[in-house]
Image (cartoon, rainbow, N blue to C red; front, side):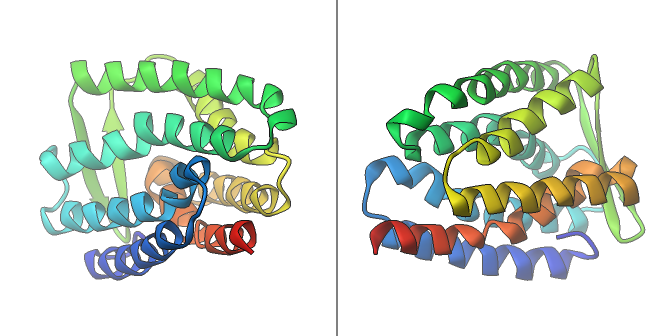
Length: 203
């Protein structure tokens, strides 16, 4: 979560525990990728606690954090939503899937060919990497992640999509330079909604 290494570590452990509970409860294989999202985001927050402890920089933890936050989540979320969606809803999820694939490819290329660094800025962490056309990539990223939830056709996933969309606007307004870090933390906390989604799917 931002604020400190301890806050990230505690939040990551709690969110990861929710993720373990989601994975343990899931019954359908198609639901597994989305059910595992809180587990991935919990690990992500724990990785950021290591970034805090190392004082930022461009070490292994920073690179791992960026790989999860950028290319991996850009494909994980829309693929997970598509897998879990009812057959009639899958056609409208193709644009977020395509946006996620294209955005993840560009982000992965940027990570593979250029440096990534983290800077502690008060109670937040700012990440920097060389990106061409960052506004286009941001739109593609949000279409893939938030858009897939909003188009899922599932009431609980729609609610999660609204939460993370509001969080994206708030994080952009409050912490523009630290947007990626703060929004990922917000999305991780919101992902506990998926526990209710998993319970409803197996009820």
